[in-house]
Length: 213
Image 1 (cartoon, rainbow, N blue to C red):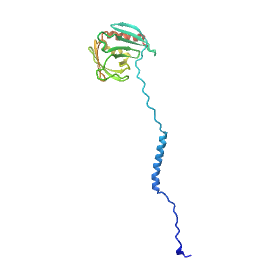
Image 2: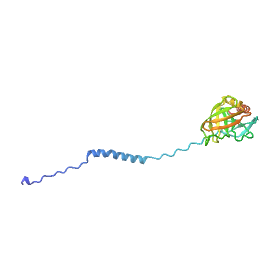
Image 3: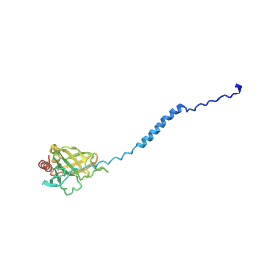
Image 4: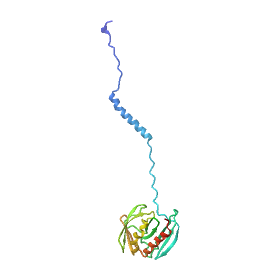
């Protein structure tokens, strides 16, 4: 056969994708798969639980200890069994809107509760558990700068170590008139303190005799 009439034989070559395209596509495929896997495993965290309510001061049944100078001292026996003493004064005539002081003495921590006041700053309210600076200005003795804690009933509680109670309360024992102010609440009012020396000493005597060690 004449070699000139033979048609050339066509050899088929396998078609391959561009290697660069394959390398470029592979990471995106892996990332997409990983994202799907993570989304399938992801769980929605539960909403944060509400903080527990701020506890007030423990209280319990009371029985009389003594009275005098317009004040009454009582012994309180709360469920915890840790007894404490309270000295409080009846509201004088014409002073219904004035703040009130209640002295509280216990084995470790003592102090006083300031209640019955209306903050002068518009809209200011006592937040339970929050700390407030409290400035006490008496007609006799130095000005006191104290730290108070807000109670759930809207009162302020100033705590001091019991071993220094009488010394810390001395300005209030000598004063006849005292006013209160807080930078976070404004002016808190002025009150008369007749008989406060007797009340402070009587509440401490009650603590010595009846508060649990």
